[in-house]
Length: 390
Image (cartoon, rainbow, N blue to C red; front, side, top):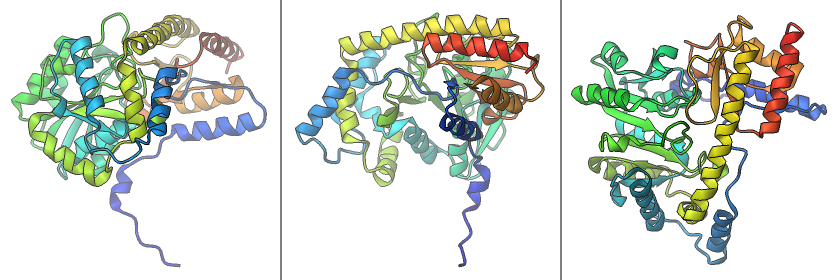
């Protein structure tokens, strides 16, 4: 049977290498092995009871029809109030667009902004799907080597150095996956000034915004109201499987993004939207803040424990729930190391190759979205593994 050729854009989209690790992990678990998962970026907490109750209430009341493509007014209003209360910034409700997860928001942003052949600057390392969203619209993600000296983030100097006639904008993440680092406010302001001076766009991924430690969370909107902001209910709000997020866009982009959202998604899940309104109630915020404190306790345990084992962590992560660790003192192949740790120690970690070539061979990512007891057991297993000469 003859098959039609697939679109050439698929050549620009790499598979998730970590999926090989996860397949190996699943096979080991089916054999009865007990594994400690530090690979997936998913909170081990779930939506609070009041959020679940709000979803059940919406179903009982029959609020199950399509909503507008931009989201229900109650949720857009609650998000606008959240910006006022948490960040002291006014964001008009009509500029807030509720999406089917942050992934949909990134897709919409790239669909509205990325021309074929256009370059978008982003740091290496960075979340792999970000560059693939750019590639989906025949743009080119231009990865800029960003080491510990730059907090593994894009810098204003890097924007000046790497901007070309083909560059259209930047895609940033603060806090970042995989590094857990934020962009310092003065540096972020300088980056945006460089971008604006070149008439470029700035997409800022803030999906780990609520999970910042050592300092209060912030938003780029206090610096630049024309930045395109991406956010999510998956991380701080613990609603990964509900597939709900939002974006804030400048006035001139609202109609364009609405048109794309109508055609691509119709609307986000109505049930998830009605449930998410409850997230912003004071009682639920108190729960999320307590969970954030627990995440910080885990970070404060894991970072020094990994350093003691021989991992180099030159920048203490101040957000999200990741530690991006240099393992070059322990191995010359991070991918092999991750697989060997899985097989011999029963600990699931993510090799750096998913996050860009610059740090691929000598970094691994640890997720501390797991209980403190499990983290301590993982460290014990890693210590035993390293003691035996790996």
